[in-house]
Length: 113
Length: 114
Image (cartoon, rainbow over all chains, first blue to last red):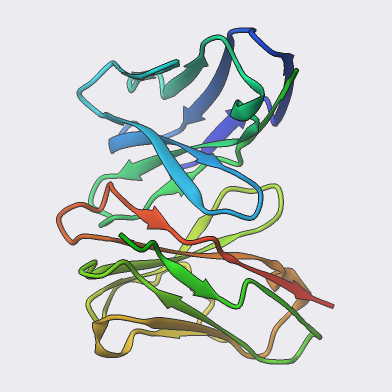
């Protein structure tokens, strides 16, 4: 059974700091991995999607890496801003399970001005 | 483009009562998902529809939860009777059939069972 774990559960940093969020999964049989952002009272927004054959994806100040063999992914946020404050969730899409996504529990990020 | 709409946004009920949630997906999205997100956890897929057929309902507690998608557009999720542990945010998402990796999420319905 696929399990996704995110560490840390919460993180508070001063504005401008670079930071790394971690995600691990137990079964390497995945199509892809996504990082989402969730703001209070709002739905999820996809940030980055990494296919199983890829090693990393970048979008602006965000960089996500994937090491499928070790079951790990990281989300790197450069020069953090208060607007980055949100909960970040990673999710894997397992093989042969349609569009089902299995999520980690999330990391709640707070960036202090 | 309008996003995924959900209503109500908040609902408070007592245990053993019934409740229903409504979702209107993005126009043209044939695939619709209901997720349950308990406080402090990530979303868990309850049921996935393609048009009005069920693709996956393996994690739906069928003794109390039911869902339908009439005419392959709007969907309702019902809980009857509710338990305290059903307190959660219920998220609806939709996607194109061939773009299941691009799921668009609604704002969710926050259910509190007292």
